[in-house]
Image 1 (cartoon, rainbow, N blue to C red):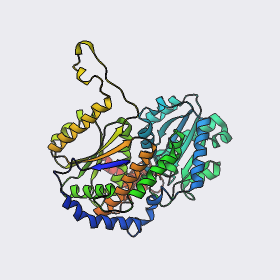
Image 2: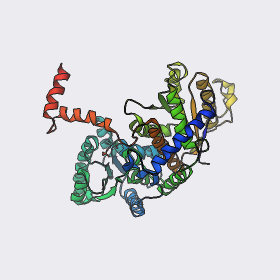
Image 3: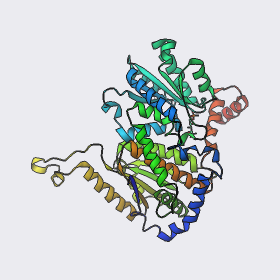
Image 4: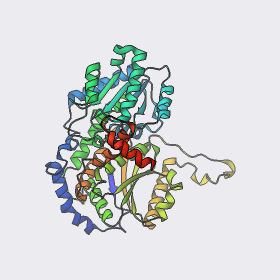
Length: 447
Ligand code: PA5
């Protein structure tokens, strides 16, 4: 079994009957997803994506990844939100946070840009690249998102100065809408190789499309294995009852806990390699559920690091939260603790034990403590952190998110709220068409 959901940390907060009551509701929501019969039904391409994807494009992605590996020391991936988080989450999940320093020969360093507006961060990447060869994968479905558009303008210029217009053309890969948008037009005009963000797949559900797959493949990860994992999860979580299907059960549990006042979910990991997975999960659930004045607020935490900071709150603070712990059973590599003469640090009782063993006891001990403190714990145990398991886990959370959104009574596939800050920013920047708003907002700011 690739992963398993365990109820150990939930038994004192809900009973099996409550799960049974949820069964018809979850089944209905599953039907809504499979039959595309509810709101957001034009954004359900992700449901069958693990099996129903463009095989010709998949092969082109693998070829482009090889070309990037051959011609570049550094791949700069430009994108934000759904056009960024999945790829970075996958790379760090499979290779660890330090992937750029420990990568094998022939694999480029991969840096993510255009996911903020920090000039300092951008200049740091320029410094890191130095005189080395680089390629760019610019990713934007709409092609008009400010953050990646600014970063791309700067890097396109750098690339053309270094390699000439013709040379740059071979080093820039654009992932965007198949027909429309500023980036698509630019890519056509300049002759870049392009990859498609499917029309019916929203940004936060797009990691298993070209959006995620090109950077992931360029980082040396086996994307066929990733798709295999996702396809097996799709198979496992297509049907079933709430009680025998981990994905349905997770959606039901979240809803039960929400109704009991648990309005915050903390996705917990025990390995820095999963920190970006937590960021991906946050976008997935926040944009899908947080609307119409409802929703579980998704946050993430890295243990044991955060046990020394927010651990206090989780143990003892406001009782409005629950944890979903993703525990990876097998480490990428392990370390055995040695002997110290005199036992000056008092650790000789751990001699011969591995760090993963210590981590597993931290996991078990924390679980019991937090449950005793009144924080329900959903446990998701994953065998390994590799491409297959990333694909599997990713599909698990996507499907659970779709079900959760419908259970909550919202459309999980739109994100009307993300436009508000953009309108104000455009007005304050003086974008043509926003003149009136600019006056109003400046008066408020000065007032
Ligand atoms: O989920 C979403 O739709 C957003 O987070 C987008 O992915 C993000 O804003 C990037 O959009 P685009 O790919 O159009 O540049």
